[in-house]
Amino acid sequence: MPLKILATADLHLGKKSSAVPTDAEESSTRHTWKRMVEWAINHDVDVVVMAGDLIDQDNRYFEAIGPLQDGFDRLSKKGTAVYLVAGNHDFSVLAEIIRNKEYENIHLLGANGSWEKKTHRGERGTVQFAGWSFPNKYVREDPLATFDRLELDPNMPTIGILHSEADNPESKYGPVDRGNLRSAGPDAWILGHIHKPTPLDKEAPVETPFIAYPGTPHALNSGEPGVHGPLLLEIDGKEKIRVNRVPLSPVRYESVKATVQPSDDETTLRDSLTTVLREKAHELLTELEGVSFLVFDIELTGNNPDASKMDHWAEQAVEKYSQELETGTTVLIRKVVNHVEPAVEDMEALARNTSPTGKLAKTILAIEQGQTTPFLERLMEKWEMQRQRINRSGTYTPLDDKNRLAEPGEEQAREYILQECHRMLNHLINQQQQEQ
Ligand SMILES: [Mn+2]
Image 1 (tube, rainbow, N blue to C red):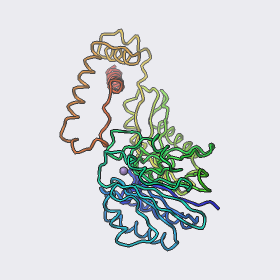
Image 2 (tube, rainbow, N blue to C red):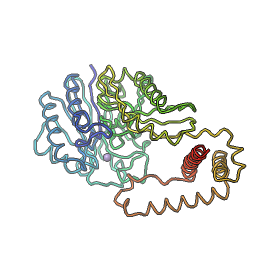
Image 3 (cartoon, rainbow, N blue to C red):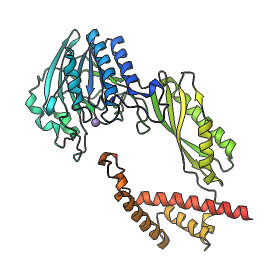
Image 4 (tube, rainbow, N blue to C red):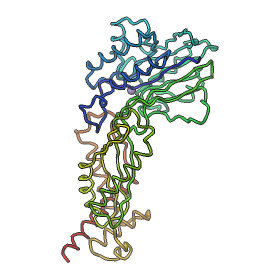
């Protein structure tokens, strides 16, 4: 029998998923924590590993403590060991909670930013754990720089536990290099901080050392699409590791594209949205057991003479939409992004016209063909000036760098202007049609 390790990170107890009814118990991360503890107990897991940010410092800090202790108590009773490290969110509180209760089975490794090793000896084998905890909110130094002082037993299966941002040397969240992780010694690295799970290749054998971000076990927002849940590592000896994901998140985010036809009106648009969502939900059906909320972002594309009305139509469709699947999953729409373009039959002919519509058509063609015009140049300058003005605005100074949008480049400016030209052109054409 292999040794079973359930590995996770970034639980962020106290947080709730966005775009899901807030009164639903399944919206909060404590629900997934309870599920995870139950799963570990029911499946005879030997060790639970958690790579930091278990508690979210910004959100209901005190509400998080009770559920965390309940889970630790249940695991203690069962005799399941827990090895964990602190992240940038819980660098101070995690140590306090564990110290107060004096758990025998819970091991917080690497307090104050110094590496620590501990050996787990169980019925199903022996594993060495090496961990490092955040000493402060920000750490600009590479935590691996002091790793070799640990002097690990090279013959024992070894798991490294670390909260850090890999492959970004500028990071203030403990920057590490994946190459250095690979050569450091452990047979597997369980990392925290990045919420999007590292994809698993089910077909291929596990490469050692195995390096992964398990991701949040509970999907928190639309930037974290797909299946979420802890990883189950089964260890049969050094370099003999099997890895599978245990899907435990009650919330799942997905995005779909819907193509609008030129002949679509409000009713047919609603019908085609419903069809697209039903098809996508059925595709995913076998993965939706235990998923209470499936939340969609829809991107509308295609051509339609009423392109500008799509926003309103889509809004109406979203409001009226509700669907429950046979798995008990409620399907929700978070938002509809309108990329529908107006159906102008001959853009080239229109562009030869000197009217405002002609000028817009000329600009659209220039952007689409990667060219420029004096008018487009002026628009680009104005766009850049406005962008800089907004960026300097006091409203956004409290945001730290991580939460700021990346600096948009020229390509994004052109894309944005293209959308606006289409919108205005469509508006003018609609006006002209009404006047006729
Ligand atoms: Mn973090």
